[in-house]
Image (tube, rainbow, N blue to C red; front, top):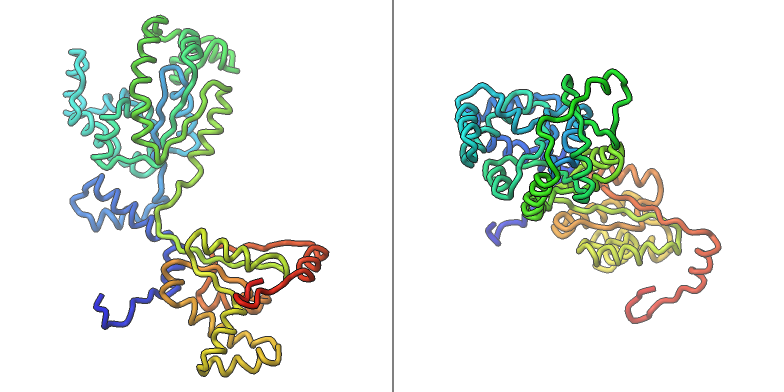
Length: 401
């Protein structure tokens, strides 16, 4: 901006509106989905996207070693969130040229090329049910290279869960695994036997039940990649101990999934401190301002500063201060509005104490569009407050209590 021009001032109501409706996150979501789905008609795509009942659908990756309980957790998670459960086997069931090409590599016991692998996942995730309801990727990706390929393709999860358990426990679980051929649900002869006798009667031993040596090799291979996967997804990762009852494991997973991630949206603190005299409002405001780099505004000190500058507003305030009368709310609000509208408060945020003094002033502050996003009430007993006030002293040089 030209230095000769008036400085840019962002109206407070714009900031409040953006925070209230999470505009930054909405724009971020729209751009991310545009880049992932690459629609031929971006405008119509955005219109359809915004007309959905739920813009924020689950985007979850569930990782873990063999026999850690991924399948059980993933199925329950999808039942709870209505998201689509996706394994690589599910992806290969799609009837497309890509899946047939991938299957040919599997038939030859060869690795699927990365480009083909990522195209398969993109094709599956672009299905209407995945777009509208979200997805849970089970055991995808398996390596850091695959994770980086997903990131490059714009497939970024909101939550990544990694299950962990001692190898001894996992090997024991593997040997006792049983499968329900009707539902595909996984059970265990010791740790998770079905309550229904009908289900118990039809359980089968998996055809691919691994000998201990093979299981140990698979665990070793998993551990070599797990650390790199943790680094790749460190900003959205939750590691959960799978060596506990499956009900507790799922409860912890669900709690993590239901907890909103920290938003990268610009955030401007607007803090109000309330409390009786002697509660320590001034001290706490000073400490908060120092820690978070925001503006400390004491209403009383602000009124004194304005009354000393010989302005028209100062002349209005001075008689009230000299006679130790309460300054009218309308005058105080005009002074506060001017101060809170300055660039430092708009850009960095503020912590205010000494106003509002009653409900009517609180309503006036709210109507002025300077709505706080954090309000703290400091409580103290009358005896302690009186003791503090009786022992209070003033530094004549700095004016500090």
